[in-house]
Length: 396
Image (cartoon, rainbow, N blue to C red):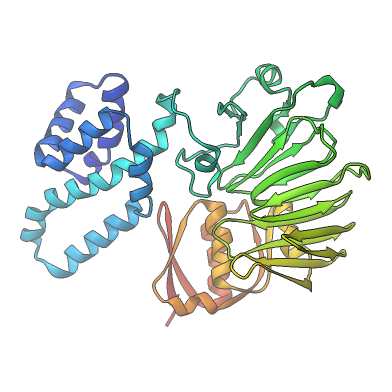
């Protein structure tokens, strides 16, 4: 059986469990099940519609293209053509087992409307739902795809207006109109940017692989939101109600200003970059005031604040559709590109992480074009597959 046929197994299982399959698909499924007891066990487990999230998390580090290329490369190098032909079915059986948890997890929420995910599950950088578009998570756990929902329906459900053309969710309204505010969360997947106007008129641009938790209206003495990932804030001034951004054990307190916060879980520190106005950073019993053009780094491990002067464009240009780098190490550059283009990055030579790049890359360009620019500047080679970028090393 060809490799391509096995890639259909996850889709066939989904159709079998939640609908119907044709005779050819049934034959393929039966053939796959006959190969091993492990396949049968996995299929029976999926039929119960349990443990799907757990299984995905256990296998989420495995990438289809890269895994297959490594298997195929080893075959090419180590055994003859005749032996490869004999081993191919066994390898394909194994590859199919790896593929199924990934595929099931990515489409499971489409079929299982009763599945209740926690916010922690949904908004993590590698979220189990594999969201492709900006999504509003209501306080009752309901998910609303902001690219597909009817605007009138959204207003009725959440009180928000939506402008799909400029990818903006608008909650700007009189707080007296709402008796009991709801806590909702805007989740933005990789390769997307979405903006939101809060009830006080503050505007926030939420970057890729990020989320913002906020009340539908501000009723308390302070205006508090929670960020995971990165966002640019343009805060409406209100001296009676300070605006607070809560990020992973740290608070950014403002009255009215523009600033950027980068707080991805996979990063070692939280960056707060002030463009204009004034903010105050609070961590436990420590606090630090900022002036425009300054950046405060909060080390997650050391729980320490550090302030320095920076070129703010280097940290806010993503909002304008580009990344500006100034002698940035390659690991940091590739982390941003991988996050934006939804690709994992692997290094054949760890030393290449320390190479540096200076230049401007357009966010909406194909990643191959951006990598070509880096290649010309650093002489480092890249290889791109569907889900993976491999940093090959320095061109000889």
